[in-house]
Length: 238
Image (cartoon, rainbow, N blue to C red; front, side, top):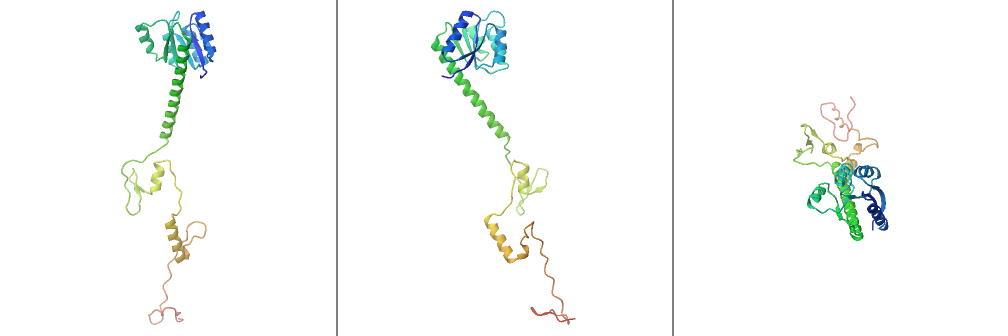
């Protein structure tokens, strides 16, 4: 059985003492005891209990229902009402504070124990559900998705952005998502580059930066008489 810190709100001293002893026998810790509504609100805020057992009918104002309403404004601690009143009007009024359960007086141990266990388990499951929902929403907030029809050039593969400019695909994706790019060669392109380098050694990079542009070869000089020299034969001296 799960142990909990429980705040007891009961204005009858003998009943409050008996209830605290029962809770301790069940393995729970009595976080505090309040005998009126104002004290209950103050202790709930200061002690932060795991559960509150609240008597509906308390002497003076606020009563148990009004105290529960005040506690609900600043805390989601589960509240279980204790009452000897079972009239419909009281139940309808108490329901507006969204209590986890009702326990009728005289209180029976087994009923009280089962109620506390069920309330704590339901509250723990709800807290876990809210935690997971919060984590999912935070993860979704960090994900940017590209939707719609993108205009892309069939030749250069640039994409037209919202401003009408044609930008590189990777530039567009980086602007509209959390992705970034690193450049390299796929196997096919790597083979093609190596073939190009073997056929054109001047295009091979020197090791730092891209290869320098290759100047086209100068045209052969015109031999005397206006005819170019035959291939492989040096021109005659002028």
